[in-house]
Amino acid sequence: MRMSVPLSDIRKASTIFCIGLDTRFGRSVVGVELRKAINRGAKLITVHPRHHNLAIIAEKWIQPVPGTEANLFKALASLTEKDRRGKLPPPSEGEIGNFFEELSEVAGMAKEASHPLILVGSHYLSCNDSPQILESIAKLARNINAGVLPLPAHNNLFGSILMGAYPEILPGGFSTGNRNKRDELRTLWGADVPNFSPVWTADTLLSGFRMKVLYLIGEVPSRNPPPSDFVIFQNIYSPDSMFEADIVLPSTAFTETDGTFINGEGRIQRIRKAVHPRGEALPDWEIICRIAQKMGKSGFDFSSVFDIHEEISRLVNGFSDFDNPERKAGPLACEAELLSPQTRFSGVNNVDTEFPLLLVTSIVEHTYLGFPLSAWVEGLRPLFTEGIVDINPEDAERGKIVEGDEVVVTSPHFEKVWRARIVKAQPQGILDATLDQGESLGPNPTPVRIRKKDV
Image (cartoon, rainbow, N blue to C red; front, side):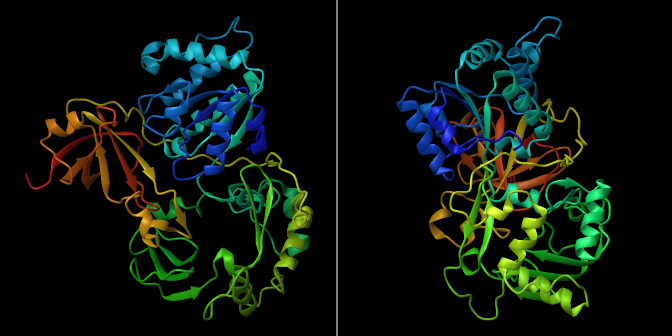
């Protein structure tokens, strides 16, 4: 995101690399711009393990075997170095599958491109090796002098970083280890800001660590019930079907309040209230302020969204322009580093006779406030079916599995039951499944075996 460029750069790009990007059900504006770019002569190269819409229009589709992507991108970065004298050789063909010749061709196209551009989708972000993959993509971009357009699945990732919504980051993108910035905030807020603690992160919920109070704002826990003595649930939806909350606080949707978000270009986008909220629903900021005031805490006497914007403008560079229709896109200005989770599993993607298949999992991307949109939009249910595992026809025939059968998927770390969907385009030896919101099964990809349930 520190290398991000405006979406309009697609219009002048000569060679466009799309990495883990599928624009079938999202990013439609990007999909239209890519087709326009191809019509005027730009070359499109897509890297994705599954059949996707860009594979149809791309000049070249590289379809890596899941688990080999980190080496593949490392090789591509190595092959595009301007001066390879004295450099280590790129990974061998055995490390990257049968792609060395294709990668050499792609590297040549990249180095010859007059205006290269890299679009990074969300597919590889849930892989074990995502930190190494992103590091190699950044190196590739520097090698070929390419702009990068990050396209994460969820809105306002830029904004959440600049607001300091992570334990290791202060507002403005500064590290919690920056003592001077912590002192500035202490003066402004009249309260101490602690240094980063690795305890209070989302991983806490997955660890089973029991808390006294869990306060969920626009989020749904992955465990049912949550590991907490007391649960406060603040959302526009009811938690009734998922778990019992001790207190439910009704909040407003984005259409019912004013605010801003920062899109993938780094451009501040204004949101204006369109309709009045129903019942007793209040904006999230107002609920939080009322609770803080009842607790006797100072610094929460905001009377409007404008007051909050004013405070953010003092802490985040460039935010004073939030109401300017001429505001520009820009790369992320962030001093702090987001800590990537340490891979706790090594060599887990090696299949063997006991676990002969490889399972790749992804998360539900089309969500709002923790709930999948298919729960509320009937037309999405056939597109984003839940509890399904995609299987290649030959793998299914070997297991005597037919469409709709319940299938037990077993790995060294878990056992799950999904309904089978036989997909001709699914690579042989590879299974694909989409997890519930917040669900985690450990290593991704992971070796598994399958069998028909109750047989």
